[in-house]
Image (cartoon, rainbow, N blue to C red; front, side, top):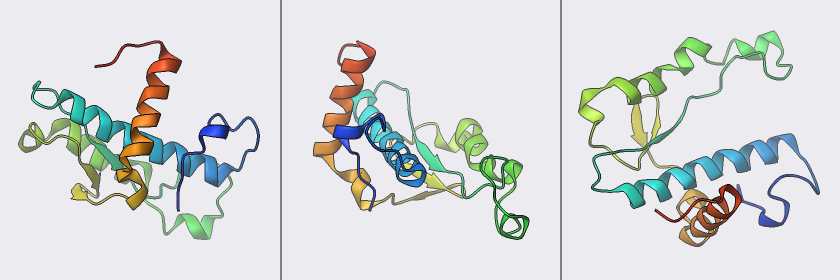
Length: 130
């Protein structure tokens, strides 16, 4: 289960690479859902995606494991699809994987945490509410 640890948001107290990475991905999804609600009806849309597990040079993944991962080119397909597909121009606030809308994790729909994350983002960036 992924969680946003507001008492260790910047991983300044404790850092775990997988836990921190997972929390950042969860925050991205929650932020996308929050932004989508706020811009609904403006003609602007926002969506998020999971590209899959990519065989990149990040970390030290053994070669035999990499053969089960997507290439960077294959991993970019959903991003390119979302940015260029005309049939998606009115789709807002969705999570995609393999060019299809999917249901994201249960935690990503927690409105209390999402609102807290949104408020903290405004505070840290010194922006005003949309």
